[in-house]
Length: 204
Image (cartoon, rainbow, N blue to C red; front, side, top):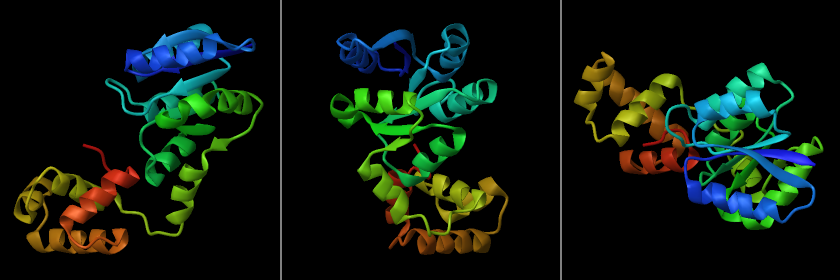
């Protein structure tokens, strides 16, 4: 029997997972958590074989929870369930220790097979997600400072306001904005924000 824990802040998602699993003779749902902190505590109590982890949650997010669980239990097998297909988000999850990455829209078709595969020691990315990662694998990543600037652009700040908040000169901010546009292949600031959100470089 494969023992599973579901972690998601939306009860409707957890209910959907429970219903899918309930009909399976070889899989059982042993725990449910609604945020990352609760997930770590319940993992200690139940030691599930496979954990299904949402990324965007209150308190502790999914990436932090994956890191915390894998730090204590290196053998933990974790599948990310998310609405985000962005390559940067995927790479963060895989680096934190996730073995699978599924979009919530494909749960009905792929969840059970992915649970069994990850339990058997395989890694699982859907073709769509693998394609996203491959597309950007040779890109120059944004530096932490460039990511900070992009977040402030996304929040509607002009260069002068960004300069004040980051204790930089306006010229430096212009330089960072130019680098961001270049690295993301963006036409303008709005386009850069759209790409940053889509790829999971920033979130709002």
